Image (cartoon, rainbow, N blue to C red; front, side, top):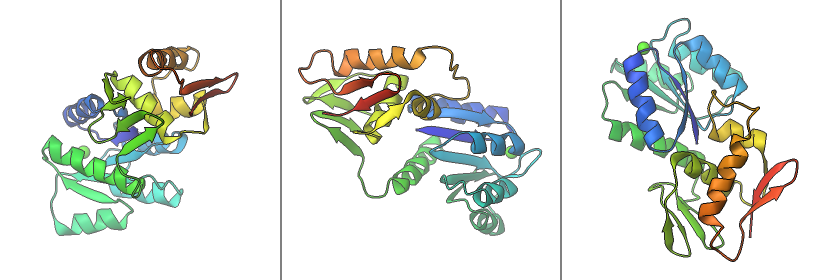
Length: 222
Ligand code: CA
């Protein structure tokens, strides 16, 4: 899951970014509204978190512009104010939910998960293919009931492959959802991580689930 965070206060931004990374999310950070809009237009995000008071372009205008540009990614708005007027304005501008600063990280995380879940409708939190299971809530991965420990990046990659099971995913799709802006497309980092993942989920099992589509990418299937 790739998240865009638009927040100008460096301390809050790094607190949120660190917390999200620990939860296996991939995070891009923008310190002003214009950069936020730019990133939202060029990348595909699963969720966008927007502070209301931002330099260059405020959060309300940013939300409106994203919606008018048909970016329909869920938006969580953050603000220091808790006036009812601001909430209404935020939701009117196209935000899906609203959180007042300061907030406990646990609550913030619960809101994010709720928004991501709403997006996936009622599919539940466990992804399954063959005897491989991934719980999106607890981030636990099991194959044949045996727990498999994955790093953040491996988890993010497997989750993406599982969300698109039985479909060919290209390296570009993977880079857009599993890596952030720092991704260097001239490296073979995706193939390296796919190999790490193969070693953990496929190597000691009879049936291979990750298949290479030569010249294109990968497919996860039985
Ligand atoms: Ca701010």
